[in-house]
Amino acid sequence: MNTDAIRVDRPTTSSKLFAHTRWDAIPTLAGLFHLVYFLGLFFLFPHAPLWVMLVLGFIYSLMVNANINGVGHNFIHNPFFRLELLNRLFGITQSIACCFSQTYYNAVHMQHHKGNADRPDEKGETIDWISIYKHGHDGEAESPWRYVFLSFFRDDIGAIRRELRKRGRRELIWGNIELAAFATVLFVMFVFNWRYVIFYFLPFFYLGHCFSYLNGYYRHYGADPDKPIAWGVSSYGKIYNWLFFYNGYHAEHHFRPKVHWTKMEAFHQQVAELQKEEGVRVIEHAHMLGFLDRNLPKRGKSALETTEAIS
Image (cartoon, rainbow, N blue to C red):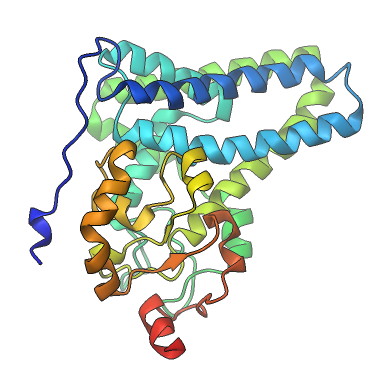
């Protein structure tokens, strides 16, 4: 099959607000709800019982994961609005809700697509800054424990800023505006209730990003970094993909990153046979629960090798 000929038509709309489809109102509202939830935690903290706040904090951590890998992820590949200003303003709301810059995330994520979870070269470097192989040994993926709990501290801000400068001064300026926006919100919260920020918010904020890295690990663990059709691992659970706006179709996404989330099922139908022939790895659970997979390959063994061993 000529893979260059595989394509899915992008959605079109007559809407003067949305760039691709009015269905993007759903991830937009989800992102804004996350912002309201984040702010609401601060105002609720002095009044609610500790056990209630712990439950709500854990939910916030899950929401960070869902936002990064659902709303924010789709917003990178297919910005929701026709007007650039609206996209920039939504990026600020995303940055405050998740407490990191959406524009900086864009730079990291597009670098991820340049490398597609590649293995280190002869100098020990990977194109993909967040590749699961970057800190592994002998061409194997890093331990999920190390990847999940250490990746948060590995971001190279200097490299991200250099990448944004390549795109133009405007990108770096907007990234810094987003950083300033969430830093200002956190500072105001700290002034009014430093205990909330230090002892409550920051642990759940960190946990949310750990969940995101856990998600990312099993979206690529068992994939084949050398085969475009198999660059990712897919999971097709309905509820999971509704919540994450079809980022569960991750092999499909890496094969054609610009396919809109509303077209992902149709695209999967086009490439399903080819994926099966090429040994694309599919798991039954949501990626964050990928460690529960019954056929989890040993580190360093490809999904195709695992499939052959089982058969």
